[in-house]
Length: 405
Image 1 (tube, rainbow, N blue to C red):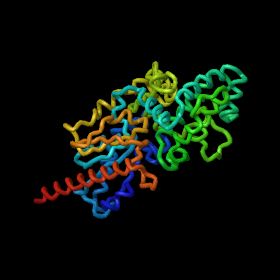
Image 2: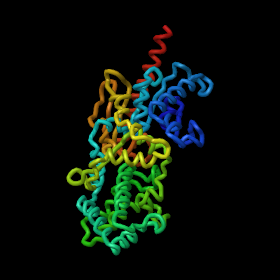
Image 3: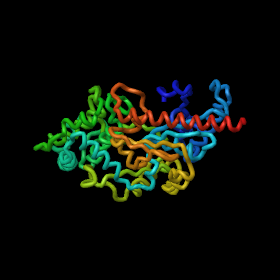
């Protein structure tokens, strides 16, 4: 965006989503009850954006902007969903949208494709699939004995105050911790060092797979292979003395907003089936029921009830993007990104709605700034996006001139 804006003489505007960041409708009481949290929704956020855009066209906030100025919505991930929905719901305000790595079709899709792509990304980068599959079995095995739990605590350098494995059931936290690291490494698998989620090297999945190329002969060595994954993701700089695998005690950086949002309309239920679908373990059964119980236990004190979980709300509100009802949207997905499973999986370069699938692409890679190590594929995608945006602006100007005549 920042590279393209000067070429188009455009202003770049970031509008904060209510309840995220400093935009709290009820101040410090915004998260105190379901009544106050009731205004946290995608449709309300879209209405906010539409209001702000119209305000910015008053000619005072942005010099030269008026009612005839073209507006392009750009976003990635959940932001990519919002950018597409903004064009779909407010086509008289938004002239086009770039929707990158947006899992718009998740709500009508299989839940297991996310883990399948994570597996493919690691295996294609050189990881030994069987070594990782064996790793989960080894963690379970070691957790069954006091001596084994001691080995896991030592190997993974677990925080002695917050995250020690003291009983066999605690290994669940450790396995989820490793799985989360693998998933996030797939998201940030860019060709250069980044600090998008954590500090990681360029092509981090390839880097970590250098240490998982064979099946080890001992349980300790096998566990160390999985430790290498979490250490590279959570502690690449080596600054941390201990790691914390228990998110209940350590937290994961999220405020209450997103977890609550996932208990109302953003019902994102990801699970793995295990081999042959993926190299994780099977945790799919009763995933919706588990989420319902978790949401109730987490937010019941605020007045939450299970009827507030609306799994069909997104589909009912927005449906799926269709050229018969909307236009001027470009959807992009990289083949390394697990979220690509829930976007448009077939390339479509003609018509009013376009879809691009590009190789060596991680999570919303095309929206990142220009870098000397950028792949040729992402360079081509950005050129395509730029040309589409130019076309939308031209269409807006032609419409303006026609109305004047």
